[in-house]
Length: 379
Ligand code: COS
Image (tube, rainbow, N blue to C red; front, side, top):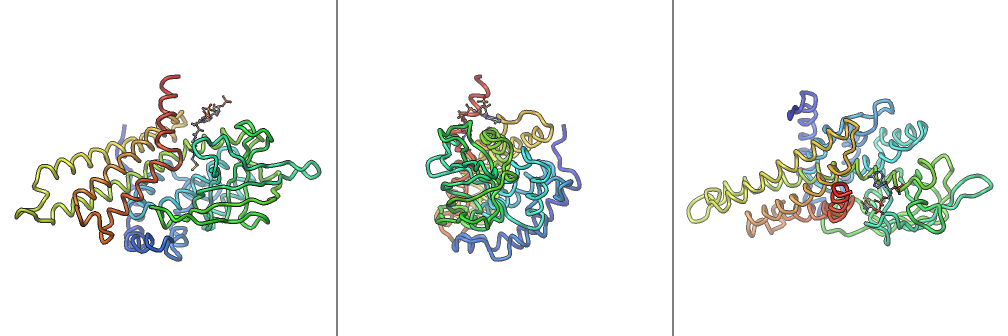
């Protein structure tokens, strides 16, 4: 067993740290205020090769192992969880194609990411969140030419307003249900495919989150990923593979909040001494550090399992759930350590606390993660 990163990983970590320190952290507050990423940021991230980290080398990507990807997302999460979310959404939206796509689909989809494009994973709908099987978007097969016509509305889609390509789930059965769920590649300029209202979110504000409206969107059969009715399995496997990365971003948020709290506790004087010398503060710092360390180990172990090709569904849920929960706890405690200053927008920890909240909600709520874990253990 080896808990260390190798030389290549350490080098990459340093490069990403420099990128985050130069291009993300200094602008995190401004991006939070404006609800937008800095202009040109994703282009710079693409130049660094951060948008196609999961694209296999044979399709022109970075082809990184999961631990290295988690390490990168943790660093991005330290700088801004919103930007980390946008970038990690590329991995989420690429997984279905890598899991079930044909060679041609993989090449076509990966080429978009290799050129610096962003992708979006469109599963959630106004009426289909935790109950992913109840997707109401319909895909009707046209008998004459084999194309599909898609109609419906998607909600809370990360990157919707900025993505070049979308992975859309629709139901091919009139009766609905998981047996009809089917995945489709939808390029952004497809007629009838529109970006709807942009969400005004509590946190991860620089990540673009919008509604999607599909009105008689015609998709060739060659853009169907997997078989008709295979979409639910593809979606579940995709979420399994993406959840450790949500864990990694959560670890990044928690580590950054801990670092802020530590620095503040050493500088802030009350009763004539730094508050770091008070045992109640020390206890909080120690608890925060234990949680961050444990979450990171869970994330990395799950990534290791993923790369071994063994079933990691339970571990993915554990890592995501635990890391998200502790990100919420640690950021809340960081605000507490920093008192009134922690609560002020002049300091970064209140943003981290707002950012952490979504980690417990998206890519499967932590209640759903607990269901998955319990089911895996009990049945
Ligand atoms: N990998 C592969 N297949 C899976 C799977 C997985 N991780 N999980 C479930 N399946 C398969 C099952 O094997 C089953 O197939 P069969 O019917 O052929 O046996 C099928 O999918 C249905 O499984 P199950 O009965 O467990 O599904 P449920 O409807 O009970 O739903 C939950 C399961 C709740 C776990 C699922 O709906 C879920 O993960 N919801 C959260 C969705 C989510 O994360 N949304 C976030 C939005 S995307 S960012």
